[in-house]
Amino acid sequence: MSAAQSPVPVQDPKLVPVPVPAPPRRPRSRTPFVWLLILAVAGSIAAWWAARPQTQTKAPVVEVARTATAVVGNIERTVRLSGQTAATDFVNITAPMMKGPEASREMILIHVAPPGLWVKKGTLVAQVDAQSIADHVDDLGDTIETAQADIRTRRAEQAIEMENLQQSLRVAKSDADKARLEYNGSETQTDIQRQLLKLTLDEADARYKQLQADVVQKKASHDAEIRILDLTLQRHTRHRDRHKRDYQAFSVYAAMDGLAVMQQIWRGSEMGQVQQGDRVFPGQPFMKVVNTKSMQVEGNVNQAESGDFRIGQTARIHLDAFRDVEFSGKVHSIGALANGGFRNSYFVRNVPIRIDIQGSNPKLIPDLSASADVSVEAASNQVLVPVGAVKNENGKAVVYVKEGEGFQPREVTTGVRSDLQVAIASGVKAGEVVRLD
Image 1 (cartoon, rainbow, N blue to C red):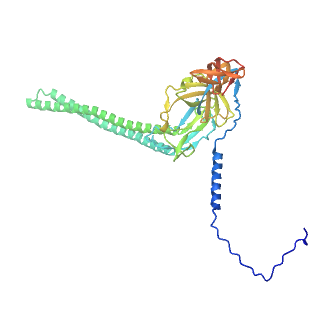
Image 2 (cartoon, one colour):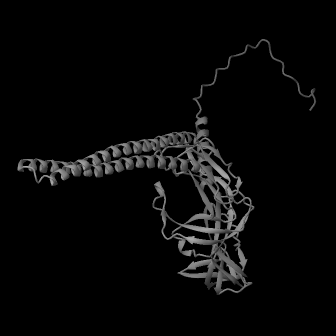
Image 3 (tube, rainbow, N blue to C red):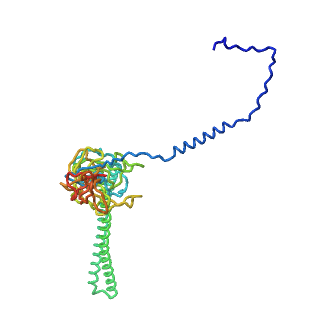
């Protein structure tokens, strides 16, 4: 329809608009609360749907068995013990034991051979400060000379005393002889005179006899005095000789060819090797001269494993400091009694074992930490399977052997067991596949 066909009504200006009354006000709507309720119900339904148990389809489990093939070979069971290297042929160098009165005093080392030095027999390896001993020996020499002079002087004085006593004895003998002659010629004398002569004779004889006894006593007294002086001289001489021996012992010489190895001593609050200027006590070891061609490993093994060891068993020895060096060895000795630990491990008992090292090497020196794998049991040409293939079921050894598509258990008899393999005496043949897990 065109615009001409649709006439627009014209408003009459005379007409007055009449106001239309407002519609009545409706009450407030509750629509937001309804929507909130709907959303809460929907959330609950969604949570229930998510939490409900769902049936999932599991993928089929494919069982993979680890297997191994039984082989023929040699097997060896070893027990490892740890310890340190030590020399079997050595000489301890100790501080000299002094014979003099100052036998307990400290000594100062004024010379010590460098550690690690190869020394020959008779080489000076240590020397103690002996200046005070030398001075004392000189003083004792003067004392000895004085004692010898005292003996000579006293012998001369005794000779004079004895000669005077002998002279008195000779005079007394002459008086006694004279009195005897007068008494024997008194026939013409009166009785009173004869009695007086008799008394004179008795007095002279008594005096002579007394002087004879005095001579014997004086000789014994002189001998005792000389003996005392001789003992004093011997005491000083022995004192000097002891110090001379100490003086000679203060120079220490090697008693054999070998390597000089220093000992550890307490220096203040820490341990250290002996060096020049240290103080040592008589009899204290401070050095060793060792023959490095004759070495051993000193170790300990728990008493639970000590029953596996026998003298003569072979061993492979490694040094912790030089892992590329390996030695062969043999068990030399086994302790008869177990030793306890210290402090908290006092209840642990270990048996000492010594293993001789066969061969030598410039790197092999004493006091190195070492380990030895001792062969305690071995067998050759045995059917071997891994340790994990042997199970213990109802107290029997069982091996699962592959038969067809599965594995069947077989009861076996085991032999030597090492850390990795087990020898099968019967039940499994070489080439069969066994299950490990």
